[in-house]
Length: 406
View 1 (cartoon, rainbow, N blue to C red):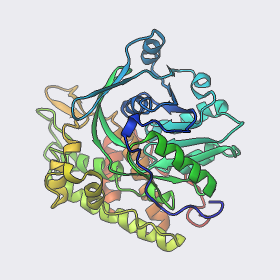
View 2 (view 1 turned 90 degrees about the horizontal axis):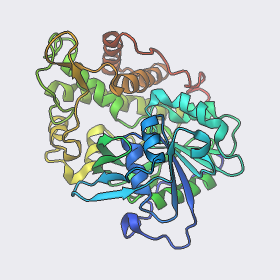
View 3 (view 1 turned 30 degrees about the vertical axis):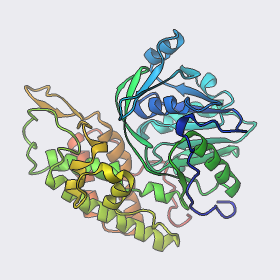
């Protein structure tokens, strides 16, 4: 970063939640790229705040047409059964309209779609003021990708959020989504090129639109190495359909959930992968001379994130199966094209994002840092072979001279 970043600190919780009137706060335009679960939910929540203009850039002609026709309000159903409603100020496929005068751009699309998106929106970003472009979540090396695509754009501030602020599910596009468990705190980081002044401005903006306290991390690698889907989904897939797994050679008889039905073998493999992620963290600290202590073991991360929503946190297995925030999240299954039953969906983000980008990045980082990661490498090689059509190898935006020139 240019200068010294402010230390990690809690944000200021809005005392009356989403409906708080922030005295003295002027208007702010937030453009959300993606009308999926996270994008839809954030659009509704942001519009509960006075003075927030929300535009949604979508690739869905159906969602765009529904908004243009003056269709029903977008809704979000909370865990206690309340319905929040709002109408975005814009929802459509035109990036010039969506990004006009934007102060903040939130990218909610999966990792495999982000490069094309950034190239698409770059010509339409404002040039006469700072624009804060962040990914939610900011994993898979988003800072490296955005810095590469937006090089030369000095007014663009690159940041990312450690995780999604809320679980969101049961989306009916452009109409309704359900809100699951919420994070007790939110964590963000900026690209190393950004200044302390940009960090302070970002924190002020985020604390205006989010209810949970927002904390600033010291280094973007704290997000890149946060244990999450790149560890979790591949481990469960391997335990379900990998070598020697119960459904390796037969279809599923019925639908099942990622976590409340997680097998013991999946939890154990996840623990092994998580330990290796910690090894990458320690190697990064040693090579780069930085503090990544906020990258905690996954079990600790989940306990801190979900608290009393977890019924039994004694082991990874019991934690995953009793976390109410995860309850009902379905595994990606589709009808078996060869006969009865269900099979894993090869079009799932678990393959195209978590493995082709998330795991691929971890394997690359481990190789360059000379860290040993047999469990991660095993699940990665198996998934690539099983799928057969994944983009393999290092994501092309990872700096060729990392970590030497970091």
